[in-house]
Picture 1: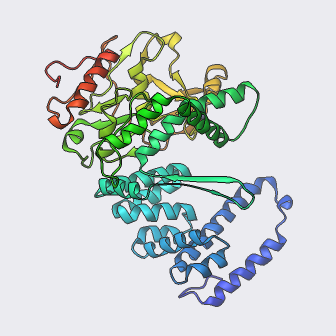
Picture 2 (picture 1 turned 90 degrees about the vertical axis):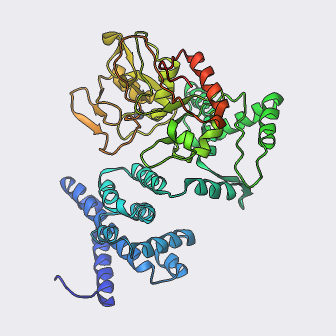
Picture 3 (picture 1 turned 180 degrees about the vertical axis):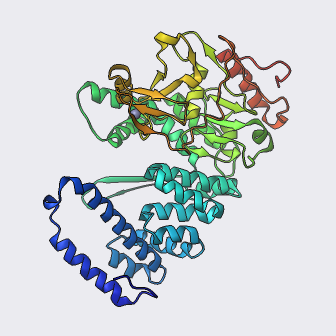
Length: 465
Ligand SMILES: [Zn+2]
């Protein structure tokens, strides 16, 4: 029977009774194989519908009652309460929730992003049906970051609440929690990357398999131990934080010398000059996404850091005949995103650079024809007959029979628009640098000159700063 009008509490009670009867009779082994997929999909839909109703109701109750009723923690109940309140101003998202189109995690992420960017509601609801949970979280994060009216204030906020806390659990286990501005996270990850890869490789060589988090833990202590036995590096970095003259309330601007890690920055010259990025301009740290210009400015004078300065569309324009990617092709590839380019794979360490069309056939190494692959997918491609096709951001992964296994979603962003190479013959290298960078970043200009010399780049005539 389909009832209409306002829901009466007794109808909800009836629903629970019906569900109880259904649950009591459900025998998974009695469901025919052909029906299993449909039953699981229907139950998923039922779960989203019920979750959606709980989310809609949440704002009418207090978080203690909500946590008890849903068997969740206080902080999860607070999140649900917040989402519930937000939905009153987000009719498009609320509609999708009513139709059972969004899971709890999806609606939390979308409602949060739509608060900052109301015009994105429709596209985010659509994205939820096309993207994996992780991709959707990134899309929401990027939407929010791009709509941030004052990214500098946001970074200052993240700096003020920066923390590194440690505690012991009741059984003595040590735990720690670190948070801070995203650009610090990028430095942290970069500092661990080499040691992390080393730990991972060593474990594989010994035939051990552990959770990736275990290797990162070991890597962190490797790095700390190395710092302890290398006073030069230690002293250098400690000095940086105190000699840059910053008030303690601001993120330090010193970037440290002698660092081995590489943080890839892609920034429009105009944004760098202005001190902040306008809509449509790029100011990204690879693996982090959009950051305020103040987060990248201090990184630039560091000669150890590879800097990709974007001016217009002419960034990386490289073709050559050797099999190996050059250092700046590698940098441009890292700027594109350090993760396996097989759609749906998100592996982000121990990646190998693959020639999309085998080098043995083309004898060319062109940026657009290079892809990051994790070792498992690299092996499948080189030995198993699997193929990767399409340009960066629009990749397809085909099995040996040519069937498509996975495709990049329409809105997967890899920054490939920023880094589209133009065929220009062999061995010629170009990097256009804006001619009128203001005097305040003379040091950056000097560093870029050194970088250019180091990598054999040549500036376009007449534009050398
Ligand atoms: Zn992969």
